Length: 282
View 1: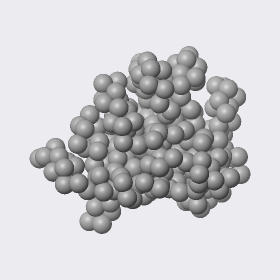
View 2 (view 1 turned 90 degrees about the vertical axis):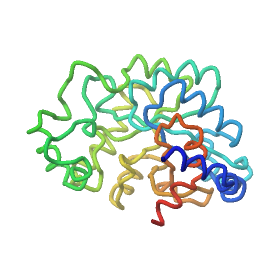
View 3 (view 1 turned 90 degrees about the horizontal axis):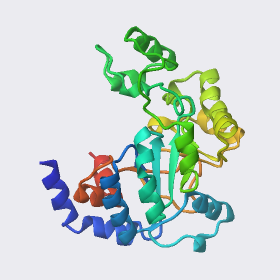
């Protein structure tokens, strides 16, 4: 049913209207997580036909210089959150297509056999409820279910150091905290470590020039933005709905989730912002 709905919306002309009018002089940032190579090939081909894909660095520089002419029409930035091990399978495609992407890494999970907390199913508490608890309460409940952030499992969920090193020439790696908490649910000490220490780990252990942070789940507070600025980040990326310009608040950049889809109709609808536009109004 949903597939049919995406097809109807796509061929209604709304995505075309959004793309050619709303997005024309804006910068669209897309969010992916763990899309497979075949879906990525379809996705990148579609995006290349309909948008001008740019580097996150180039957008930041244009904002800092207030140089609107430095950005093409229908500019689009591709980002991936978390640093899933499957991202490494995209390396041949990225080398072939030369499409710039930014992958935001969880500094305490990459290069380990630790797992992302949100992949654990608590027997009694749904993930949506866990997100609303304080970070300490959430971790205490997960520990009773056999999970802790430092626990090493049999298989990794995130890329290792060798894979990150092997992709540095085609990927812009940036920060996604240490253990992917909901930052507003962290106390001040936890928030400092997750934001500031994550940057230090990625720079010292992996030799990465870190200047951007994606807030886990898109959740952030004024305190988290202030910590990001103090740490030396140049921008912070949310999942707030909308598009960006050179006048956007660099620490509240808007982003659209595409849900790692392999459906071309869903891709067209979500990339245009039409889907999120109506969802925010329902």
